[in-house]
Image (tube, rainbow, N blue to C red; front, side, top):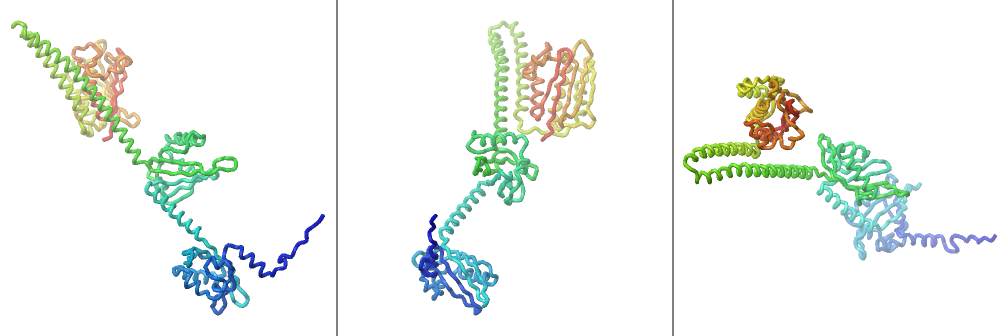
Length: 506
């Protein structure tokens, strides 16, 4: 086996020449700075890079150092330059400082000096260091700073928060705006993922999970979900969350995701209000349409009969006219009653705000029973009242009287001839809502057959000559106008129960 002879590292050249060539390959300026106890600094060595870094020759920089201080170094940076140098000398710590120079040809440049001091036995301190041109880096940092400031201001203007999910640690960085959504102190923080998830509205958790699953399975280009989170004030805020995975491990598994939060509570509340308004408008349009149909149908019938009778009246004999006048009077009375009923419906449906008062339910029922005393006595009705003396409802007085009067009158009107009539009034609380049940043992109804028409205008279900089919229709409208509802339970030949639920809200 043959080996090459190892040549001398200098290969015939002097050690100084060797080091000089090496130093000249270094892009930075290499220097040695000496401080002596006489409080005097001098440059002992500088590499030839000084001509490119400071546009000075080696001799100028060593022998005429004042040129660097007076003509190159930025005036605003001189104090920092000397102060940091003195601190490093006194404490024998590394010297680091960034400063600007104004060069005749290259213009303004940013430099960074880094040096390590050594204390010598004679008390002098020697700095060994280098100077680097960091102009490009500073310009990049400046652009980055401007970009970050723009991004920050854009987020603030948009009220967006930032989240950064570390999937390995299952922790999340939240920016100050995200913390603001929760009503917490507006500062950046890193917390467990569950801290945020545990505040999500229970009804929105599955929606959130499905949105995340759709993204991770490739069914969606990014994660996006709208959900509610509970803040420190005990109220839910609507949040629009968007994000994407930004890093993966060697196996292609997701390790980090970044996204934004946006508080859209005001927008969602306006959407809900708009939807409610649209529903109200739709409901009112339906009511208006039904009302128009009722008006058209009923007035047309009366008007048709009236026109027909008048046409006949014109050619009738004198003895026939007297009888026709009686018929005209009956048609007129019917038309009047119909118009009164229609007016009642208009008053119910289009009253802007119905006044409510705190009313004693038992007291109002007693008044109705007194009004109907003769009818109750005539039919031998047995009345049973199971209402606490202090039971109250927040209701309109006229509506409460009308509702109690209509249901009680119907119970008497449709009592069974096969048994003694009975009407029971029961008060109870159901899921925190007040309810009054009015139960009779009368003729009853086939609920399955008449369910959709039970509360229709001019709907009758028994052959009662006094029935006009307007009472239940008006009563239902009054109850709903007060924000309540009616439930009906009935069986043929056994009786009927109407259960009225009261809405106590203003």
